Image (tube, rainbow, N blue to C red; front, side, top):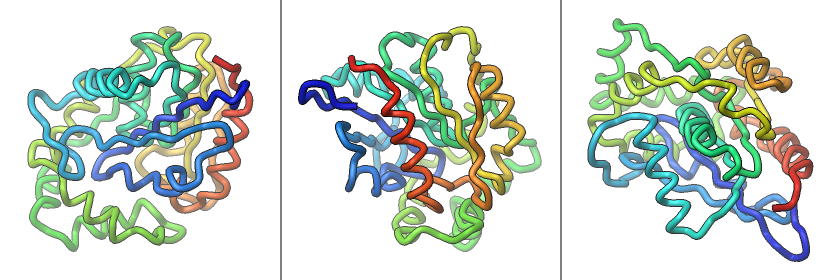
Length: 243
């Protein structure tokens, strides 16, 4: 919200096989009174990556990036893997954030990928048709207009991320109690086969809030139905107190 001409920051974190271009609609038309920032996380969309692949290291990077940008008390929006990163940042210092939006976020207890799926993850590196089918499945109600750009960025990850991000999510968890008092919006898609509606509802209950599940949408619901997503997001942002 805007208070006395002050514009608050909404920082949007993308998920796996993704980039800042997942947030083109918000970047082009920010909610009233807010500026939107959407970084490419290390190892995605041509960004360099050094060191371990972990949710903690991504959170370290986000905190350093926020300081470099001079951003204080932002609202954090995280999708999928980006939701885990947002949760980790929030748990470290909830008072440093104005609010938290979890869009098909990884569960609080992490997300375990079955061992038999890891060879398929590595195949995505060298099989463009398989990567296109996998990303396309995230949008069961229809691919977004910039799907070609999303596919390009999804293919432009560093090699360590293909299995590394799945391992990182399996080895991470956060305690809901560490987020007590932080205003949080929890969203999911009815047709999401990765972060199912049941997982979304369990997450919301643990965080002491209600879940909103968008009917007929999948894992990519912010891009499948940007109008509905924006209405929910703006309604939440309007409830946040001025910094």
